[in-house]
Image (cartoon, rainbow, N blue to C red):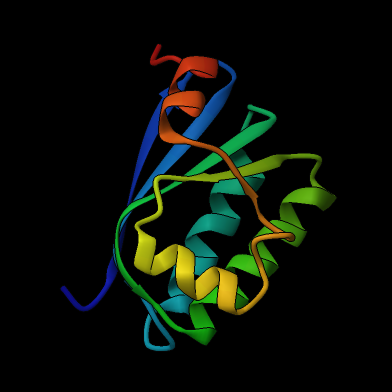
Length: 116
C-alpha cells in the first residue's frame, strides 16, 4: 500500500479516524487537507487518531501530524492518538513528539467513547 486511507467512525463525544497505510512525503499534503476539512466540519470536541493500521511514517508525516495537532488546538478540539504499533511509537519517540501528542490505549479510548 503506497498511500494512507482514512475511515471515519462516529463515537459518543468523539470522531475516530482509523488510519491505514503509509504517511509519507508523497501523500502527507493530501492527508493534511483531508484532515483539515474534517476538523473544520467536526461537531465533537475530541478527534481520535487510530494509528493501528499505519505501516510507516516519515518526517513529512510527523510534520503533518504536528500541524494537525496545532490546528486542532486553535479549533478547541482535542486530538488523542492511540493504537500505534511499536515501530510507529518508536519513530514518534525518537523525534521526541511523544510529549506533544496525547496518547492513550485503544481500550481506554473505546471505553470513554463507545460506538454510537
